[in-house]
Image 1: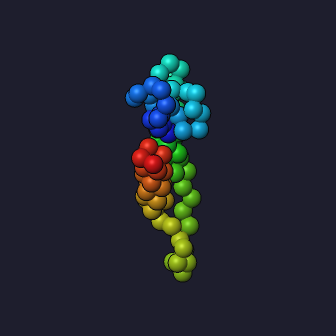
Image 2: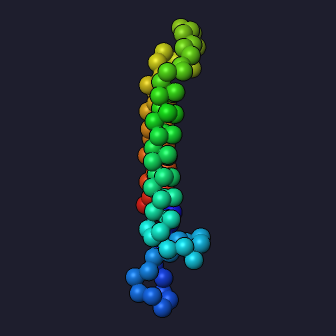
Image 3: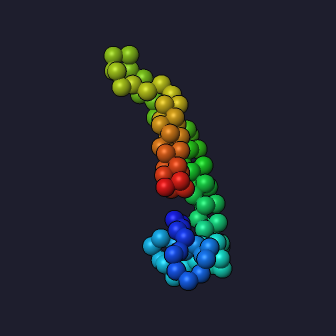
Length: 91
């Protein structure tokens, strides 16, 4: 969904970076971009719920890698998601 302004005949026209014939935020691009954004947020929510709900504890007092809760995994997922969205939307 990365868009760039054109240096061609039309002033202020913004086209996609990969497909220069597709204008950004005009016509079917609005439908596809908004659907992709909504679906990505729904997918992230489902992944976070699964990370919390589907957790297998490994309680062992002698094991350094033993997990008691899923909060560290949840935190790592949140950080990864924030970094991915920042790269995707601000690059």
